[in-house]
Length: 170
Image (cartoon, rainbow, N blue to C red; front, side, top):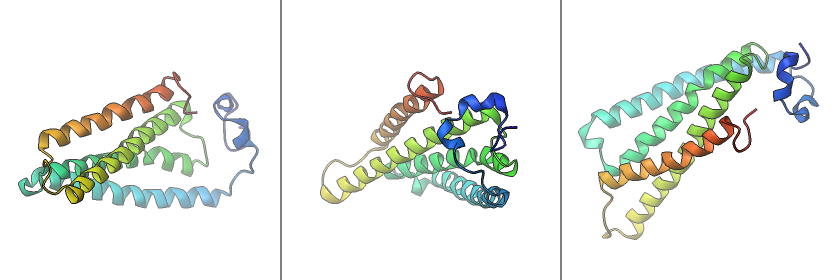
């Protein structure tokens, strides 16, 4: 092992800049692991409930709530990558290897960009509701089409670094 608990063969994936900092105290790693375990539990439970309730209760199946469900899916996905972070933290660093890093970054990019775009579409929906109350109402079809646009925009930005076509994750 060479500093930061990184095997020598994995150093090619870590920019030199990050290796110039002192290795953190193991207590910080364990604290982060415990915090993220709690965050993961609460977020998966909370977002899982939102997805379940909003998709099963007919009264909540409105066009605007399509965005709420999509945001909950993005947040759920964001926490699905937490076990990799928790595992690495309990192992004091880069324990899941290059593949774990790629999965962590890809899912984080996918869910992060998707959540940001969903928030932008929620803001647009709220703007239209307030500024043009008698304008055309958002239909379920339009809302679903907007969610498809969100994912059509999001997926390439997450895939390009994964395939090292444009940038790279690690």
